[in-house]
Image 1 (tube, protein in one colour):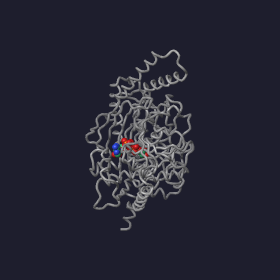
Image 2: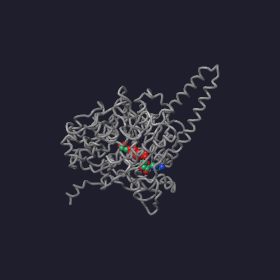
Image 3: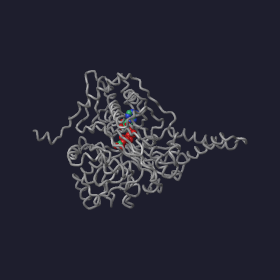
Image 4: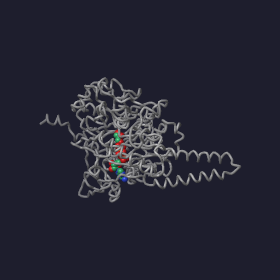
Length: 584
Ligand SMILES: Nc1ncnc2c1ncn2[C@@H]1O[C@H](COP(=O)(O)OP(=O)(O)O)[C@@H](O)[C@H]1O
Ligand SMILES: O=P(O)(O)OC[C@H](O)CO
């Protein structure tokens, strides 16, 4: 393993936002100190004749103060960036560090990441956030557990004996497998897969990527033939390394991440031989991670080195599942939409899986302990959301900071007739159009950058509307409000547009790190900081921003109609190259 601190971050591509320390931390600590003093005052001057109501309130205050002195650290490893955030047990972030890493696009449609850089980014964030935490007067031993949440589906293969990656990580947005998917769809049994694992065949799940690796990468193939190849998603890779890599060889994942591989049976929560056989994977040759619940006191091991050495890792969730927990969407019918690199709407369907008939995914929402039932979700996945904004910045040079997209969008009153079908990875839910590519419709001599900026953000909003319509058909119920989070949800203009397009209010929590908070909550369940969902009823509820629909139903319907037309016109652009060659 290279030295985790060697990476030259000046050469890293991506958004130009600097790594951020948590702003407002001092305010919070000041407030925390004042509350402590207040508590002592309360105790010193407690009236002799207090009634039951006073006593209950006092007890509640004391419990809250106790929770403010207990801490959980969360690694949030997203597609674009990595964060480490330390939360107190009232859900307030006390220290944070965030950094980016390289996105490698060697060929059109290819998207890889360096496995070492992913691990390095985690160590850097831990190191820096810990400096801030300790500077506030806290101690390492105050951190009781670590939670991990990460981008899903991104596939890695490494040598289980040496810990050496056998290739870069191939991310969930990569479309090199488009022809392979066509072939697989024609195979007997293809239509049954979704009923077992909840996912449709596409370039998205890890199974298809792994098949491509085995067929095209000789190093991966020979390690597989020798029984040395370990396969995992990013969570498994990070946990393997945090536990000391080849010294401990801990190879685990959780139910939410495993549900994205297309190898796991949604009912049994174990690998299904029919799925492995379909992808021609021999499980006696490949080392697959053990599947654990999302909260587990021991299964994910502990940190082997660095400032957090010895601290147990007690939760692991895919980032979208984690955001569902972070929104405390614990009951059936609750939902959230996260606008990060992509955009993912998860709807809690309770303790039985639902297989969608309208283009959505059946997936695991969370399982907060071995003794607790899994909770399932219906998911609508949109491949491009914040990455559309990053594209305007990095590829087209529209601005130098993704936060500026809102100013650019506000420079024009509407999209000026432009519709941007941001199909950089084809179109995901609910359309599943593999052969669409990014297309801007309606350009005239009148078109300004501001129109394109609006059209980019609107694309995620229109796809969210299509997903909500599909969800209403699958579940028989329509959502009455939409809880949101993720980088692009910081744009007020985007969230207002979202409310206008879906014609229901959009609610954004004041603390935006909902994904990381979810992993902290799951980690806390494993060590009994919380035992019941009711204890979390006030978590991150105060000071929410609410965006009410401000556009007429007619105008909104007209915009959506244009979008739907543009989607239909985008079909078929990326034709099968082999067929094209044959035609010639
Ligand atoms: N203020 C903003 N307005 C619009 N887009 C933003 C803003 N801040 C960040 N983004 C976009 O959000 C994405 C990052 O969001 P984040 O939730 O950190 O994603 P991930 O978890 O996938 O790494 C980037 O693609 C960036 O372009
Ligand atoms: O990086 P994000 O936050 O867009 O999430 C990526 C998803 O997990 C991919 O399925």
